[in-house]
Image (tube, rainbow over all chains, first blue to last red; front, side, top):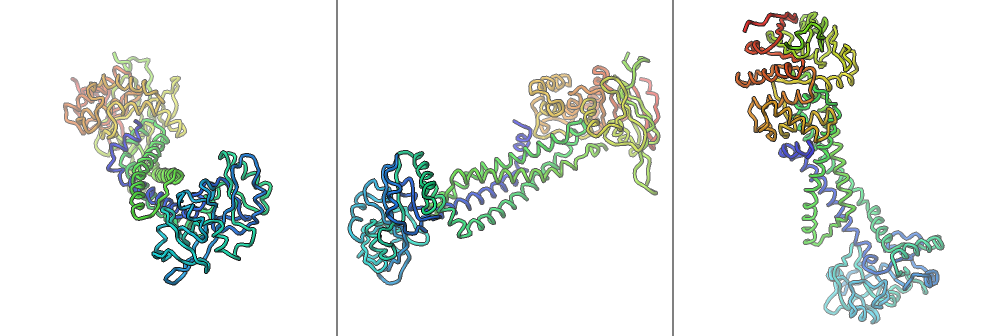
Length: 374
Length: 244
């Protein structure tokens, strides 16, 4: 074991405050990011819960809920290419949902093909539900939105002034601004009326035989038709939709400030801990300097200690984050602790601990072997 | 006969006309007044004097820790030529101390987290870039000679004061220095342990051939040393050893 680690372990009570400060910062950063990502995951639900590999939409569309009508004839641009197993129309647009008991709510219509292996049919819809959606004006909503939409025992409501029948509910597809309403392309077209011009759709969805082919196809289409339509792989469009709303709502800035505050508190406590721990060993270090050991060796050890304080802090933070994620799930909040969040948090907080170590080097510079003489 | 007793042996360190003052104005005080001293290999030199007489200042100037106001500290380099320690760059002086000097202080200043063996290994690994195996072998060798074979894996908290000071001596000797400087090495110990410590310093001189300069208040050390200096008000005087 290195001297840095050995000292850390031996004087663990002294270093505890620094380690806990790193843990605090890491938990704060990871949880803030995770909560936000979990929240904005909702914006890409139509993409993440369908099996389409490539999405073709209106020019420069940045988020799935912002698609404008495109000519259905674009189908010919996509169909027939090698490696494509299916291409289908998809309608996605906001609509006004009139509650049976009065009042209105914005909703978001998702009209897809109802084939059992359709690219646009939400994966959570059962075969029976897909069959039921073939009825004219049949819709399905998420269980969590039933109350918000005021759906009664009669299961009837109106969208854009046209009567609809709620034929079922699904779970796990919560909404943020407007409840998702699943239906057929035909129903969606009918409900949207003049808002969707004839022979227009919102998206074309393609399935490919391999993920590689999907990337190639998206690149091909972008190169050929990038001027008047947007082409994304499902992964790109999903990330793009989340990022769009992250910046659009300035939530990224809020998270940045919270994370910065956490970092600052962590940095100050860690720096102070390392400073006083180094000062406490000043006499031992002074002996080494008297013996001609270069000062950089001692500085390197202090930095190694700060690195390990960071690593231990992170190691304690992850279980706490996972515990809090579990707790959040119990109250219905999704904390998305994907590996990018965990790695990013680790890099930032270990970097912070190292910066605190550089601050603590002041105490190394003050060590003078002459002070050992009486 | 000790090597230094032969007339053709050269000193390994010479302090020449060393001057050092502290403070200014009416508070100005001379710690060293034209002090000259030679240290020979294989010689244990005791430097005594009242508190504030300049003993530690002289030790610091000779060991390259404190620059004198004037005078020279001439040390034999690897080729035997005498170089002024205070004309060297800070980096050269650091390298000189690394190669040639060992220190023992009243406070043992051992790392609480490290075992006795690791305290010595650290000096070799950080000072000489010694490999783990070599550092361990040399540390064990020194600890065995200091009678600490059974304490190699103990940390300072598990050692007595005398044992701790022996580990500190081991740390000073492990790199086989030509010069050993000891500042009040026995004053925190009872006489039994103090006696062991001065014997070890004498062995470092007589068996290893190091020049050992020991600063102390303790007159009981006199029978163990080869040369005795007395410093008072910054003036150094060589005195005869009492007949044993």
